[in-house]
Length: 406
Image (cartoon, rainbow, N blue to C red; front, side):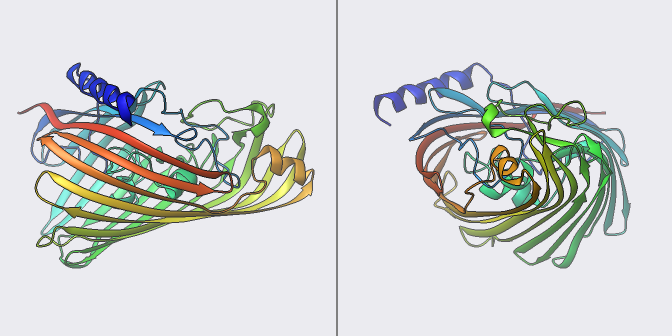
């Protein structure tokens, strides 16, 4: 990255020293094991050099919000940050809240929930109520925010817009078995967050966790039935990174809208033996939509599937150095039939869609206990051409910045 890269690296160190806002690790059990409280924090800052806008504003054939994430080039950027607090009143009851922020966007609530748990011999039963990430398994949940790589996998961004955070109720059964079914989680969500919409029915979900010694497997399924889920018309230009979809019941102006049924599927497999410095993982996500797509220009029967997968390999050289590689592929397919279907497809950005592939390599270093420095590079290729990038990242995490017992 030359002189500019050196200047950006110095800027990263300066930002860290000012105590940048932060977050807890995704997928971690946020509530203390015993009665007490804690405040956690983490932050990731990044300096990126790329041929074109990074991350890619949108991929033809993939319908999400019709808006683009912030271009992270041009200086030091806040990749992601959260501040969270959790408390356990007694062996049964706890609570957790988390506030997050992305680069130049407003802060948003990532978690605000009450938790209850009961132990029955070796089995653990948990109930949750409130706002939380819809859990699909640690490998999928942790991909993106504070991950080894700066960008969420292609499939995760295309299927659930990076992270599915919603309001709902969950019930979980956990077992400490080494071989067999380890957990079952069922959820019922409001379905207002993408891939749901501002209106529609509650969305049920199922998450299964199984394992065989060092082999860990997860399966996830959910069904949503959004009404009036909006996306910005492509010709209207991107409106920045959005955390909620526009409501088509308020207005159809400059919007493409969807009513129908959405099925989301996810699966992951991870092999991470304790006696070897190598870990391998494979994950995939898919979203299948059937319903009506409409705008002021027309109304069409809409059938779409977007699916993708990624594979990671990581080698731990020693306690402080790790190398990692990720390869990915995303495949969208769409079919529209009805009045104004051609213009509608153009407005929704569904014309000339095709597969997208990406590879990324990263070298990670832990100079201090709570600080990680990463240098990564990669290449993404799709119907829009090829985009290469290099990035220098710094991640700071402290799950117990403050805390105590009572």
